[in-house]
Image (cartoon, rainbow, N blue to C red; front, top):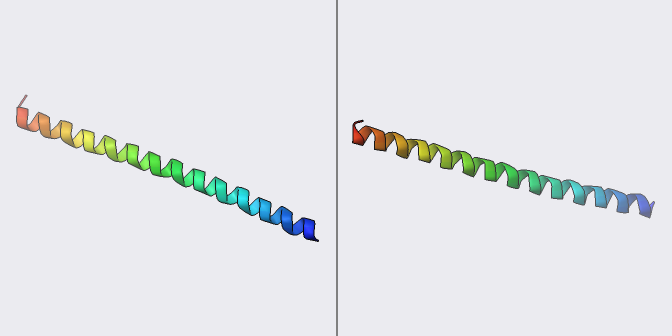
Length: 52
């Protein structure tokens, strides 16, 4: 029975690490998307002020 508990603990640890990695990837994707939006807004503002 002790072996089963140890196995469940290890499975929980793996799931936790996967959750941390996935959340990190999602955070980086959101930061990249936000940078793209800011870049588009700056580009649009430059185009509007430039008048060309």
